[in-house]
Image (cartoon, rainbow, N blue to C red; front, side, top):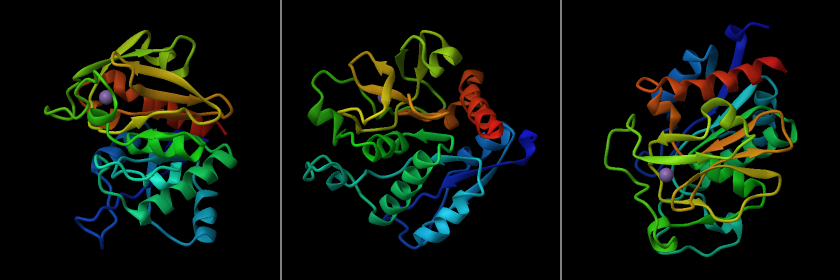
Length: 237
Ligand code: MN
């Protein structure tokens, strides 16, 4: 099957600024198109319908957004925890669970890596500045296409096969993985020890990145490679 026919689901974004809207930042769909896939935005819907929809896509993207409800990983809310959307959590965790159970290729971006980790029993730092001593600035005040900190890639990972030993990335997050979920391995770390990427050891293609490669790809050809590999994995079946 050619890449032109590879339907990729993208989880719709939702927040309290516009509670009556589902939406998707254009860069996500553009990155999928640039990689040869067909983007399909997935809104919140009943579980049965969602399962039927997911059985028709070849891969799925967990997109960025507001914070995961800490109750999902057994914690009370820290004062530094940001906005949460119960509707978004319900959608994202249903999609993550389905994809993991069916070995559907999954690319998890920013909030997505956090959902992926919690779906596999891991936990999060609710606020990096408050909870990680000596942390870098992970909420950059620079354009999204511009990389502000380095990440070191772990050898023998899928991400190191794309980018080698290190990579400059953007940083638009205030939460991060605390304890890794079951079946995930570390793939990239910032110099302050904050986890910046993970991969599943038990699936064909389950990758989470804490940065936003979709915002970098216009200026940084290396960022495009991740979407290309993802769509390739989705096409392979
Ligand atoms: Mn970062």
